[in-house]
Image (cartoon, rainbow, N blue to C red; front, side, top):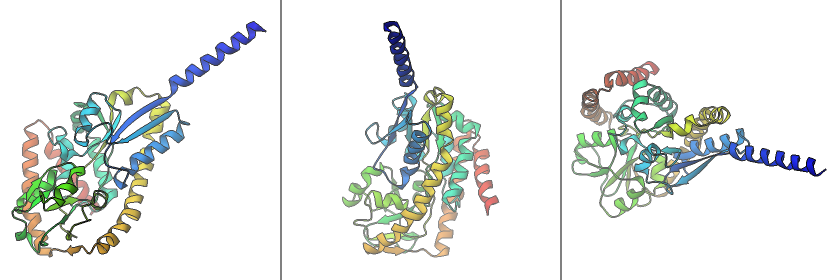
Amino acid sequence: MKKTLTHVAVAALAVGFATETMAEEWNVSLWGKRRAFTEHVEKLAELVSEKTGGEFTLNISYGGLSKNKENLDGISIGAFEMAQFCAGYHRDKNPTITVLELPFLGVSSLEQEIELSMAVYNHPAVKDDLSRWNATLLMPSPLPQYNLVGLGDAPEALHDFPGMTVRATGGIGKAMATVGAVPTSMSATEVRQALDSGVIKAVAFAPHAHMSYGTIENAKWWTTNLNPGTVNCPVVVNTDALDGLSDAHRDALMSSIDESLDHYVDTYNNKTMAAWGPALADKGITEVTFSDDEIALFKQQAAAPAAEAWIAENSKRGIPAQELYDMVTGMIAEAK
């Protein structure tokens, strides 16, 4: 009996050890708070846990692991396994994906933004670009066109923008500069204080961010149709961590991407945008709509020069910039 119990005990310990070693925990670096912008990551964590019976978990941190502008660096050294960042935060670190931040591309929906982003992410040159940071692009965080919320007198035409300090990153910042605005890059978490203190006069954000970061609390006006572009904010994973997953855990992760993105789009379209209009009305914010002629002039001044400059700059780096630009614009033209 003693011998039998010993064998049972050893077997139990072996099973317990095997179960323990099968468990997988990844740390995920986000920022701010849970909002529409992070719903796909939250859904991904939920699905991965469900599919693996809790053996693979994603521990999501909102600012506790890294500053948002340093998330790609953290991924590169394996400080955490997954993170979200925006290309415009550090254009030199991820030049290939900034093609998606060029102004006036004409993207019409979140679904189209996803399609374009995944096509770019899967391009060999883009994969090679991100491999410098030991990073694998997992999925985008599709955002609608940005518009401005601001203080002071509302702009009535493009000639009202010269000298206006605007928080705008990437291609949107470059577009605003073409009409005389002064683009300023800062973390999203710093924007509210900068706006309230007068350091900046306007902020370019997507609707969810204007609500999440409180820029509409004291704002006086909102541009309804400036639509200069959007930012591209991927979710990436540390390549070594991804390669180290078991087949089952890797399948659980990768097979959950589409459903996570569907959840994101549904949340943004049916919850965030449904709350946006009432929020503006409740705070008495003036809606500024520019004429078709003004928008056409803005596009003429910003779009072609920005694209030409982006292609020239990145071609010098050995990036197939023209190819990437033609792929993106070709997909958009084909959709129309």
